[in-house]
Image (cartoon, rainbow, N blue to C red):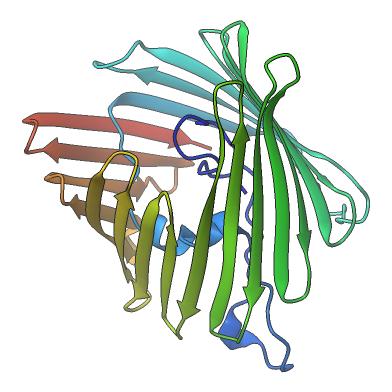
Length: 318
């Protein structure tokens, strides 16, 4: 499960900053055993990776690798719709000589110019068990403290997360995930979210299913809180497309999105575009400035319904 960084909306929907160890493709197994289904948050990852990330203003990112397991980055962002900011990012990852059995931690921290901190830590307790902790502050106040334990079996994944436990206020959020590979193509599972506070207490159950083909993946989450369906298709080595449908019973809103990604290896370019039912059209172009160790990023998003335009330019060095 990802970080519970927006507890008032959908717990656990933030992507993890750690490198994702994707399970072996279901169509690559030749030993007759069912593959591990991966994490619950990874069910829609193939489709989401096709959509462009919105960019606005001018951004400069400088990455510096200090060793095989330690690297830092500096981010300068000049924005017209939000205060300009600076972020310092540091990562301590496992080196190539370390293995998951050594217990070497993976630490990631980020602090911005306002004093807000976002810290993640990951520990491999064994080959199949890992623990994760997340802490987030908004200036001088703690807003998130979260602890997660995940167990990955040969053909299933189980995880339990506790977020923002507060003994004085008698409040806590608990999330349990379970995924099971039923066949080489089919994965079934569910998510149970339980929240307790002085004023309210309740739970939400969401069922999930995923069916994979040779070059496509269809995923559906449905429960009391709403539904989320996605379809990912890789047309060829250069073109990928994704379709998403989301419906929320809390906000009474339904959205439909279409995204695509086009890779041009010879030109060292990647273009991502999207269109959704809210009349938002956007695209991001990434161009590798070979032989320089830099990437140029240009993006534009237009909201026709609100008559708004956002344009962004970025340079990623390192």
